[in-house]
Image (tube, rainbow, N blue to C red; front, side, top):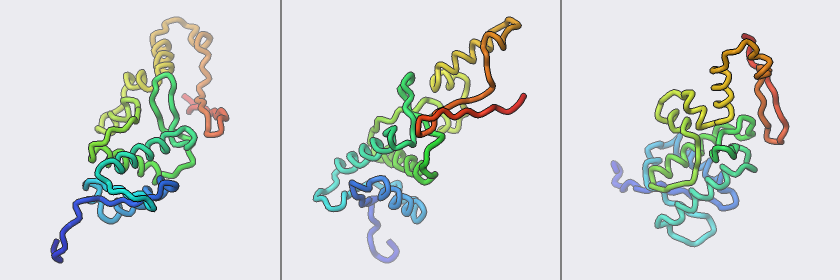
Length: 188
């Protein structure tokens, strides 16, 4: 505006369909580092090599395609939890921190651009985003089986707890290849 050129009121994003995540990551990372205020502009998406003017439809399609790819279990960034029908961060993901940052930027852009996306996180994620601490009640929403087991242990009054609950003081989870990984908890 100082040089006499009007400021662009839009955040223009040019991506290739077949490299959607990579292109979005590079472009949004450059914008976030160079001029983060641009992330608060209305998003206009252009799919390279395609005709079309974004009047809202292409942006919505962009968000839906990104979410569909990123939250796909084959992509490996998130794990779908059948019992709660929510997604959780995959602790054994091969993706780097920048990929997770992209997800945050994309979800923030969707909110800012009034795009509703089908992303089902447990409530504890939203609590953390609001600066609140997780609680035992959040565990029930996140993982009912573990919550119920802990409640049973806390309410058990008999002296044979070790025999009844047979806890190993280990944690197990599956890696991206389906192998069970087991780690001992800290002593005492």
